Image (cartoon, rainbow, N blue to C red; front, side, top):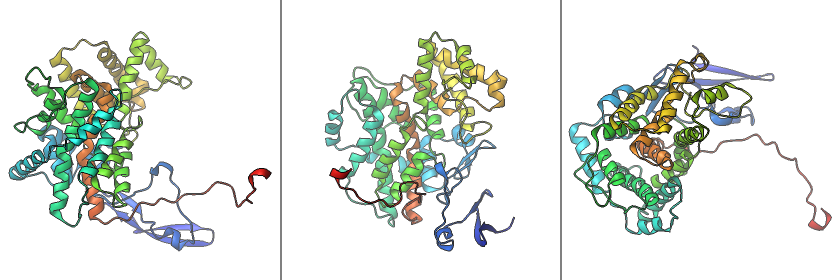
Length: 428
C-alpha cells in the first residue's frame, strides 16, 4: 500500500500522508486539508469514517468480533481478572503487580469518603428523579469540593485525582439507588474488595448484615469489565472533547455521564427491559413481536439485538450470556419478564431472518436480564453502565491530556440564509 493518498479537486491534485496503526488500521491524515485547498473540508455526520485521535487504550474490530484493552483479549480479562485489575490496566497501560494492585485499592479506599455537604445536594433531589441525572449532577458537584485543578504534568497529582474519583464514584452510584428506594445512605466497608463493597453499599438493609452471593459478585465483576471501555463511542468522545478545553476530570466525566444517558447509547439496556415490560402487558407472545420486528412497515423496534459496530457477533455478549444463565439458574427466579427475554433470545438465535442479518442478542440484552435478576431497578441500569465505563473514561481523559491534544473544534457546512437586510420591527 502506498504511504500517501491523492485527492483530485477540479484540476488540482493534493497529497496527504497515510497513518497506520499497530493493528494495521489505515487513516488519511487530513489536518492540512483546509489550508492546502483554500477552505475545503470533509463532512462525515456521526463521524463514522473520521478518526478523532490516536489512542493506545482499546482495539475493536467489529467485523471479526475482537475487543482488547491495552492488548489484552476481553475473553481473558473477563475470565481471569477482576474489575479493579482491568481498571488499572486501562488507566496505566499494564496489568498491575500484586503490590501495585494492593496499593491502588488501599489508596482508593482512603479517598472514598464524600463530603457530607454532598448529601445536602442529594436531599434536594425529588425521590422520583432519574438516577442518571442525580449521578451526573453529583459528579459535577465534586468539582466544588475539590476545586484545585490537576497539573497533568505531575504524576502524583494525576494519580491522586484518579484514586479520588475511583473511590467516590461508587458511593454516588449507591446513593443514587438508595435515594430512589428511600434507604439510608452508607459507605460499605474497607475490609471488602472493590466490587463486593459496591454491592454492600447498594443492597445492604439497615436491619440486617449483608453477605454477598459469590456468583452474583462474579457476574457483576464481568459486567463491569465488559463495559469498561469501547473505543471512541459517544460518551468517550464527549469526555475527550470536553477535556480538550482543559476542563477538569470530574467535569469531563459528568459530561460523559450525560452522553451515556441517551437510549441509543447507555440507555439501551433500560430500553430492553421497557420493551420486555410492554410485551408482557400485551400478553407476552414473543412470536408475535418477532414477526413485528421482521415487518418493515411496523414501527416496533427490537431492542438489545445486533450492534452498530459488531457485524458478526458481540464478544461481550458471548461472555455474559454464560453468566446470565448461571445467575438465573442459581437464583431460581420465576419472573415472566425473564421468561419473555429467554423466549426472544431463542427465537433470534434460531430464526434464519435474524441469524442471516446478524441480529443476535447483544451485551445490553444480557446485562438488563442480569441486573433485573439481581434486584437492581431498571432506572439504575444506565448508572451501572457508567460505573463500569468509569476507568475507560479516566484512561481516555488522561491520554488526551498527556498527549496535549488540541481543543476539539469540528467544522460545518453552512446551509442557512445568505446575507439579508435588517428590517425594523414595525416594517416586518
